Image (cartoon, rainbow, N blue to C red; front, side, top):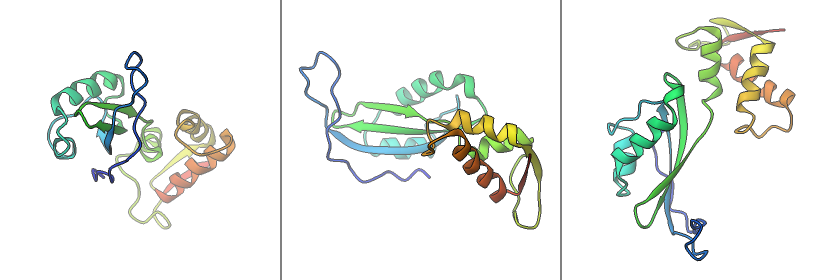
Length: 161
C-alpha cells in the first residue's frame, strides 16, 4: 500500500517563469490516506521521509485540500523532485469505500460468493461510477457502472435494478 515506486527518469514540466526547464523527478509515491487526517505516522512518514520530503508540510497541504472528505480514504500520488520539493494529485476514493458508504456497511463480506452483506441500487452504482469517471479507464458511464457493479459483487453486495 505505501510501497514507493522505482525512480522515474523523465523530468517534470517546470513552473512558469523558470525558462521552460523542468525539475528532475526523483520518484513517485502512491498512498491511500484518510481524507483530512494525514499524520506523520506510518504510512505517510516513512514513505516520504526516505526521499527527504518535509512530511509536516505535505500533511498540512493534504489535510487542507481534503478537509471536505473526512472519513473517506483518498488515494494520492506524490511526485518528489531532486530539490526535495513535491507536488501531489488526489484521486477519487476507491469504489469499495464508496460502495460501503452507499450500502451503510462497515466492511465487505469475507465470503462474497456465499454471504451477502448488503444491497445497492443500480442508480447508486451509476452515481458512484459518475463520480469516479475521471479515474476509471471506461469509455462511457455504462461501462464504468459495470466496473463498479463488479466491485460490489466481489464485496458481497447485491446490485438491484
